[in-house]
Image (cartoon, rainbow, N blue to C red; front, top):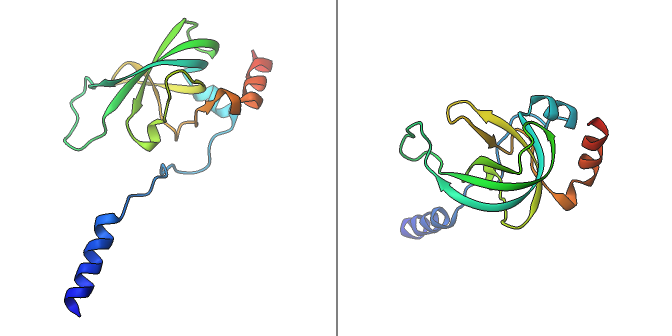
Length: 142
C-alpha cells in the first residue's frame, strides 16, 4: 500500500507543471498611466529575436534574455527611429513576440543594461489586430 502511494506521488510530481501565468501585483495600469510611465511606446513589426547575455553578471538559474528587433510602424512616445531593439525575459512575463507580427509595445528603460525593456507586468503588449482601441486613443493624444 505504501509503495503504491509513493509511486502515485512520484508520478504526480513528475508530470506537475508550474503555473503559466505571470505573477504581477495589482491590476494592469490604464493606458494614460502606462503612457506616462513608459520611455517608449510604439507599434512595430518583429524582425528578429536573438539570445542576449546581460552586461550585469547573473546568478546561476536566473532568466535568459532576448533582444527583439522591431521595424517601427508608428512611434507614440520616445525616440522616433526606424528600428527599435527591446530586451525581454525568456519567461511568460517577458512576452511572446513572433517574427513577422506587429505589436503595440510599452517599454521602460533598463538602467543596468541601458536598453529598452519589455515586461508583461509593466503593460501587456498587444498584437496589432487586438490593439485598435488603444492605437486610436494614442493617435488622439499625439
